[in-house]
Length: 405
Image (cartoon, rainbow, N blue to C red; front, side):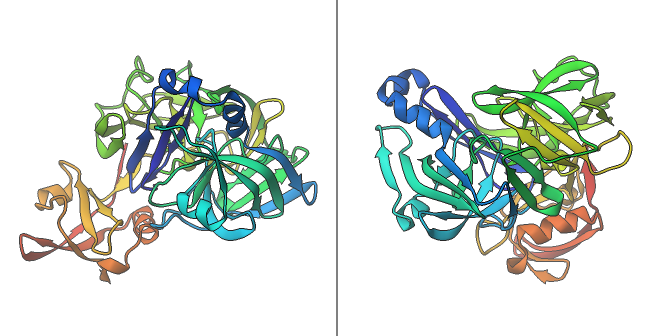
């Protein structure tokens, strides 16, 4: 789960990225009230950056793009692609269906000589790239927002690749961009609606309709919503603490997690007793990579529908909870520190506290442990031995990996 999320409000529209690192979700908000800015932004520019590229050229009817790379801290499960901007690169961008605009970092804009065409005070700068190329797909006269996080070169929003069909096979690290639909013989189509230019499908939680964002940029939780979204559903138990969420507008928010005593239906398939994270900072419910990677998924952006072809047999998919051994690591500095300790679990009982220095993990020097290693360690569900500095005293403990749900 990557360590970031972007929630931009640009004049009349917002762009949303929901990603997470560890199970920590960052909603990095740069918010300017629409009423203050909409009149100041030329409408033609506003329309252009919501559209993205004016022209999209495919070398063949179907272009196969390898999903590869990570953010700067090693988060790897969402679809990352290698991108060339104005012939310079490669740069690593996240392809995020939870963002309605494409963003480019200041570093990339400078390296690729991308021209800024609008910069209203208090507003994100808007730039135009002559070309953004991904694989053998060339996107020309591409309008994007200049946005700096601290972990990515840029984000390809849902407006990328024009009206071409997009087929995600995240499990096999492949994206197909095609002029015509790709046959998915075991797939089924689900209509989507665009809300603020983002794709929402109808899920049904115990027969209750729940418009939900398909978010390839969210590798934190499989399914999440606010308590208002989930009101009236029967939980298996009272929600328990999970990771802290940081939101640029509201500050730190505790995330909770539980499971539903019932089912979650997606088209022809369903999940029994799905886990759900409760995140009061979310603008809309979403499903993330832990659900998406159970399917081959194809967007038909002409007819506003999305196909899901199960990678599993039968009619049951899984909505997993959060794997943790009770604490989270900060990967943002060479010295690895405890970012957060969950109450009631083994590390908290052992006296571990936030900001304490981690010495080693399973015998590996802590400085050599990156997010990818840590995430795969948790997914193996085997006990983790951690050595850390507690008030000047070295402590070694072995903690079980548990699934919060």
